[in-house]
Length: 478
Image (tube, rainbow, N blue to C red; front, side):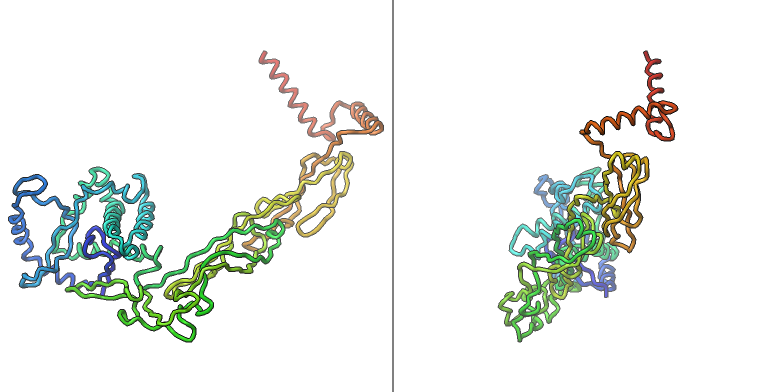
């Protein structure tokens, strides 16, 4: 048996079949459509003769009704038909009278197929008749949404609609041929109820509903993020009722199978070869009835409140990362899985270290004498202090690499590096003796074999060579 599901009315079933689930056997469908083949032409001629009445729109005879031939309902009320055959008539309003289809779905004309599908899901969930019981406009709005999606989700229909407007979309539907079982089957298969409800209602009527995910933010100190830690986090949300363990029933009692639906969560009514299946109104699709509800959760199985969890922060988390805690979200319904908890991490800055990916950068100040003569300095790393040698003639900004002294990766056991940047400090004030020594040092530099030694002053040598070429260029421009 082929189970064909229609979630609410599509453009083909927008009045009588809203919120229905159809179960049709393909052989029966083919047998039925074949039975109507022989007399369809005669019936069409009879219908054309009957439509010679004056048209209410153009006030003229021999004018077809202003109705779209693309929308049909099964007319099962023809009790006078001796062969109990079912024929079709158009009952839907014409597309020309409707709003712009892009406006209906609230998408621009440049919207992609995925954008259109996403917009349809959101609107269909919002206006589905099953979730808007008591709202007389929900059926009409849902029908309008499904009509728009039917056209804009099909490349050919959309192209004709963009070119010719509603008239083009209507023409693209083509005449419905009651003799073709392929038309009958295709119009059921093109609408995927599982896609619609799988993203908002957790499945078809009476099915499992997964719990919602929860997202929270957590701020960490720099070293806590580097080394990992345990943190208590508190957040507000639904949790399984501790009194009844989520059953919704009073302790010591159990929920029983719903009698009207026999525990299935759905009720079925037969009409010819169609079976109309809808959510059970008694149990609202749960398949269970609670005679004595839990006093804490009032039969819901969950309670709202503040939850506190102790979570483990892995070593090496970085700013903007999410930590996923499976099953720590809100509880599901009717056996659906629990949602997840997502912890979004923000990391504070450190007064010494800078982090870039898994690498650590550190600025180390040294004196002029240390830079010239060389020295040994003690510097911090993530794993403790180490001694680092400053080679004679160290230049400002020169850096050294300490391999595997960075942050451990959250994905594997590898480590980043630590980069040490030397910053040569120049004193702003010197005493007379220091000034005299520096002047003597400067004079000694000038008394050497040349004003510059490319070996002892590589940077100054490059600078002066570049300045010489610049002066020659400037002189030539005058």
